[in-house]
Length: 481
Image (cartoon, rainbow, N blue to C red; front, side, top):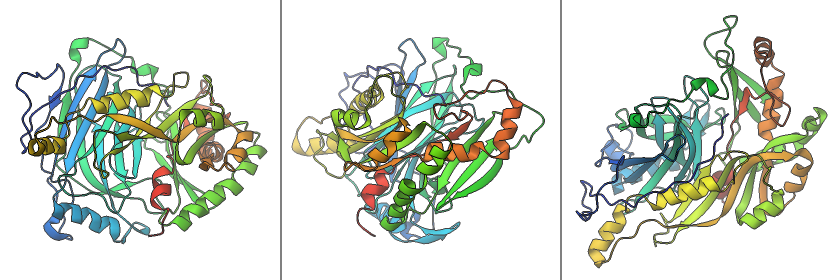
């Protein structure tokens, strides 16, 4: 997987009037080049099983801007949304009432999705002020190593609050292929039954909002052949992806093998409906993964560390022994918007996927700056009208780091899992890669290619285990439902 840092970005504060009942922007404040802002959009999907048939936001507004700093252009896509009381009640109806779906009784949670439909962008970060957010990014077809889709799911049964509470989702992309394209913004409901490896869409707006982007004037042409997962293709094996499963204790690994790329994607499914489910998973990780990893002589493991509470950079580096040579794949932190007095919306969660040899906080810092340069929040403009005050833009100050995915020496894992500040140091990504490396599909891919390379755990890079941390679930399940 290509992991790049989010580079520096100078964003301009923008104030734009919306078609809704918010304060108009000063006429003298022009819209900067390349900025596009939609009006308010009413979702167009319906469900007869809930009152009024709607659980999407009453409306949402979507804008984007891009920056050309000499490298690939960088795009920020921002969505602002609100709910009426009736629609907010409908969302909570699903998140508070179990229903059977696929293989399990599940809760349905609100999801907001940004997907580049043109295959030219690579998602490198996201942030939201939705409570208890879990992020997911996917490399959709044609499996080219770019993460076109970024979505956030709020696993919180009190979300959303109705107007005047406004929520945001911001995604950050690098442009890796020149020319115009478009992104779709889709509100949805998602669930994660025990047999699925991630939150999957159950209901969604079938008329999503489209946002076009265009930097053709930059004249940049990037070579698709440089994608990190591009390998030799073969006509000896199936053209369509091949699915499979591997059982490991309470975990079911789902694999999708695509011989054309080639690659094997891995997802891990396990029950997380209650705190006891989560505790059982933690016990399995601590007791069941280290022995087989050592038996395979694995010396470095791709590990997801979830903290019990936000920690400072000093504490993070002391606990993990970070250095400039540390290979970090994902970093997540929580922030406080000091300009927002509303406790329902003033906590932001941000994640970034930095380049291994860069300053691992650069991506988070740039994303926080991007959010601080967004539109003035509509609820603040309305409040300003009432109070006769000047509305304030978001201003994020870091509370602390809550999760990190990185490569660690195997002898460090047991120590971390005994540390009082750590909820779990999870080596499942390398453990799953190890199991899949012994499958027939992996053997076939090796026979097809002479130029495969290995990651620090000694396993080929075409086996991809892209799992998430447990911070949102750990927080939300701290009390039994």
